[in-house]
Image 1: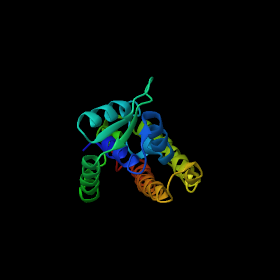
Image 2: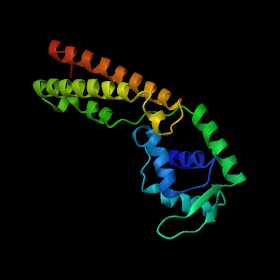
Image 3: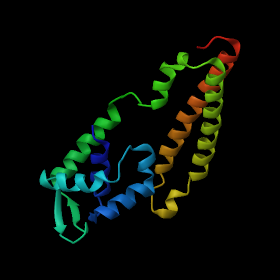
Length: 176
């Protein structure tokens, strides 16, 4: 499933936009943080979806100023992909889990230090995300974008709880 595709189509549901406007809209929602969107892929995606009939070119411009509008086929594809995202459970890919698999390759003091630093970073990330709540609306994001931030806080909190327990287990000799 290409989440960038859903994000682009969804951004164009209400208004025609050029690539820069699509990017700004996604940045306002914070999609770079939670949507795994590479902003450079937006322009390629717009062109590809236009070739597939999901978007119409309503104005050709120089220097990437081409304006796109979603077609009926694009609306159908957006809805189909959106519903798939609502119902499909996928594993959350976190590089930290790769590090966890090899925790036994670290000396106990090094592992404890790494976990402590991660705890501090998670605490900072949680505080930063709390500060972002409510602020995105000033830049045009819908209120429900805050729910994404709340979900992120919950996932960071869960990881912080695990890290704190892991530090204790390392101190007690139960890990690795």
